[in-house]
Image (tube, rainbow, N blue to C red; front, side, top):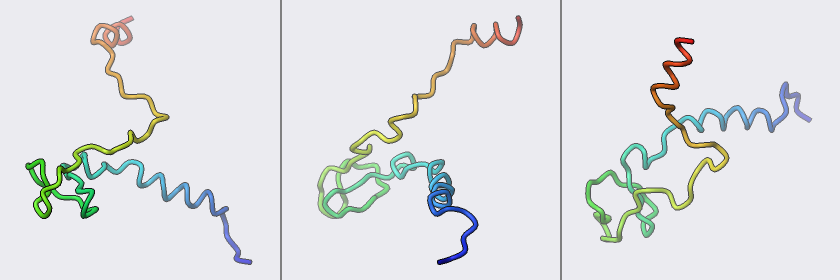
Length: 83
């Protein structure tokens, strides 16, 4: 038995939290070719190798449990700053 200072689940959770803040390839401007299973950075809508339509967004929505960011109206922000 190895002598570990932290349980494995906690160490994995620490590593995963580093990756959650990284932008996705789609956010960086890449598009995905399902035939070649590769990402390409191109302005066109089709794969440069096989001419299949590239996917510009993920198939499934990520981070379903987190609410979308909402920007409150300026009036509400001013009310909180100036009571």
